[in-house]
Length: 258
Image (cartoon, rainbow, N blue to C red; front, top):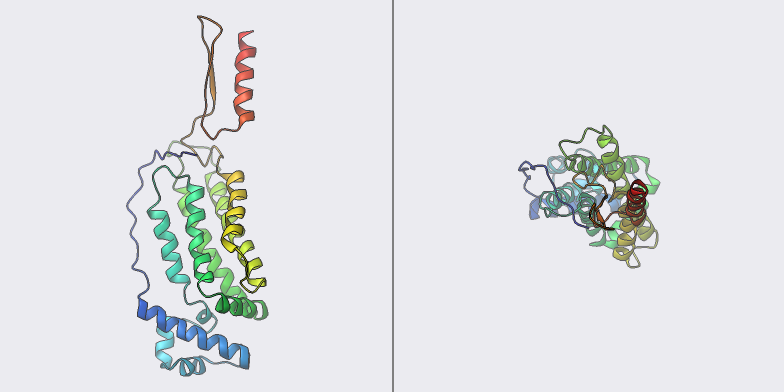
């Protein structure tokens, strides 16, 4: 499906990604936190113990994380930036839903890069409400990013009024599809072809949202014109227009001529 943007997109600034050394320290702290949470329990573990187990000072811990529950999610800041970079570099003719699906794949790559750690983190978040709340807050950041992006793709001349709702619902659908596949994969201890499952889930989302007229705001509805010099009917339609929509247009044109 071809998608053409009519709006001039502003140049967006991108924050530098987390440095390799900084990310290394964050992961060391995360590993120490998960080990202590598993052995001592979340409530009984202190920030000082996490820092000591990682071989850093307490003040170093707080340079990287604001709280101990945040410590087991060391990669989300960097992954959010990589997802944003995908959106910023989107090809001009790519449907925005496809772009968002590619963006959220950066999250799956983060989890799939270390399956054992991801499974351990998943089990901890199921057991500790504070960690679950932190995870939900992280998911919300991706949804906000994708909602803003989709809202920015509407035709500037569109005045339907439903754009904010549809952008938010579509963004939530992409994130929900991703998280559904991710949870199933984690419950299987990181086994199976998660990429194929993710592509299948995204295909469902695309069928639901990708051809919405208000999302593909630059697309025109099918039109049919009957020639006045013979029995010729000319139909103009989008390449992704549903066949039923095209047929209704043709039938209406024939009815009008009769």
